[in-house]
Length: 204
Image (cartoon, rainbow, N blue to C red):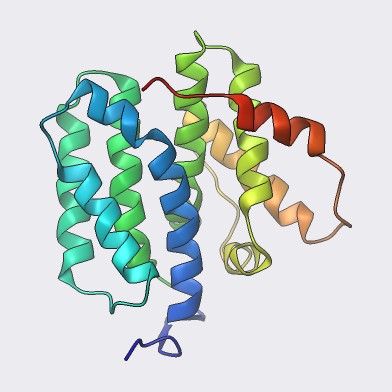
């Protein structure tokens, strides 16, 4: 039986259902860019295995060492990937598996476990478009729209993201700020930008 009501405690509590919401959000972005890694390194199954482990948890399985092991393996795959985009894609897969073990500690560093994959996916799209920042911004807007109220509620238990000068770090801080602000204002009409974001494709 799934442990959907189990809680983990630290500076606050997280339920298993909330962890599954976070994992689902991370997985969606990791899956977007997985083909980028698999095109660059077609014989390395480690990032896909991490996503599969995350999916098992999302679908109701208990979190086990499977998520931990596959996450570590995906991050090892990232370190040996031949391009920046492939490295980001593999790391996102590792983040998806490790989301099952998000720590309920009030530290800004934990925000990366929630939002880094989304920011990485935005940057991968930007790189595929020749470094066009407008593409990254549009994909970041899609990531904002994908966030559910539960995801935002979990995010707001942590301090805002800080640090880092890389493009991924900047994108993550922008997304973090937008999601926190979204809880304090009525929904905005962003249909046109959403359509633009959906129209962006990653290389197969």
